[in-house]
Image (tube, rainbow, N blue to C red):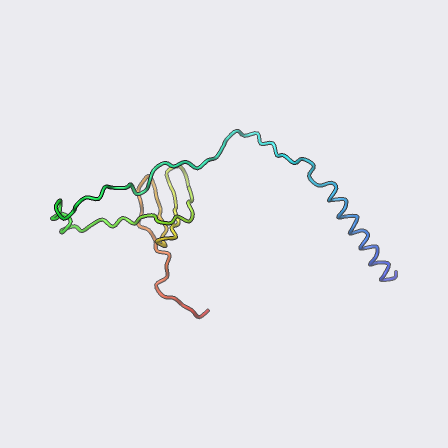
Length: 122
């Protein structure tokens, strides 16, 4: 068979194939969903809870002197929130560069995402 004729047959069959699948594509434009659940984002509360700033120089200065202050890291720029279940969350914070692991409203020690040493050689 002549290569030119074979190429013409291939092109014609390819065009007919494309036209057939274009005309027989999905005919239904709306998708019917049988479930009535609606997912929404709802503000529950702030974590960690906002506390009123107290004048610690006057109150409990001895306790602060002996045991130190609690440095609870704060979520500044959350990048992603992964809900494992209704009481467990993993929050990726871009502002502080940490991963927060929250289980039953208890915050675990966050893990640092930033590298200590920058390696520019690949």
